[in-house]
Image (cartoon, rainbow, N blue to C red; front, side, top):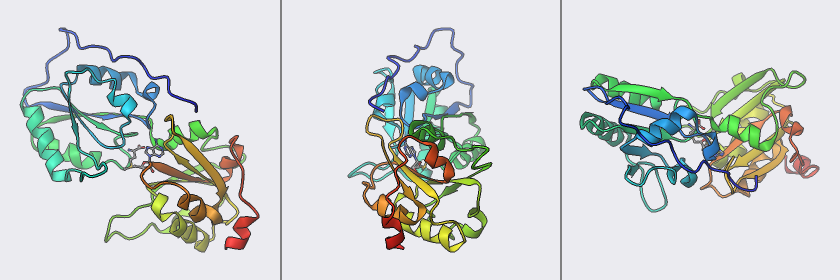
Length: 273
Ligand SMILES: C[S@@+](CC[C@H](N)C(=O)[O-])C[C@H]1O[C@@H](n2cnc3c(N)ncnc32)[C@H](O)[C@@H]1O
């Protein structure tokens, strides 16, 4: 993608907009993978009405720039030189903001219900008498597939899509690769960049074909998008070439070959394993 054709402005709030209910309400809104054109109409409307927006670090600058200038922006994610807020602090801030009667948006990258702790936040809000509205967004897997130009299913290659988190929290068991490996499937790994070599080893050890095409898509749908392709066996090498600060998704499966960027590094992969 050469650049982004972002929407210029968000629809403004009108006096006819209903006030938030008494206990308060928070909209958990998916911002999509980065390109503002991929915001849903409902997301745009809620952002245009918001008085305070708590956003994580995955939300692109191009989307934040669309917010009206009088909206309070609260970055709660990790950015260089500053730690992210704890989940507890975010939960309490959302409740306080909702109780103050303001229109609150909790803006998350991609879709709020995939690897984004929406469940914990909704649970906390409800226990504190705050209504929560969940607004879906285009998740990274869909944004990456579209940007890279391949489908996630294809009746010739894959009838199953497995979505897995590649970065287990400390103390969590790693994914059971034996349940994930197998033919005729597309495996999508979120948060797997720093662990890519181990992910490939886990899948291959569980019987997945090392020659399966794989793609790494960084900053999908954004102006600085990058795509690298190769074989599962060389995933660690491919990942090592990418800066770890960028959000990146790994897609493993024969569908990757359908994309215009398919260019395996072979025969290097055979030598590396
Ligand atoms: C904490 S998860 C959040 C996922 C998000 N809720 C979603 O539905 O896309 C963060 C991971 O999503 C993936 N991701 C999010 N946005 C991305 C993008 N624009 N390009 C590539 N990967 C992205 C990366 O794997 C990143 O490490």
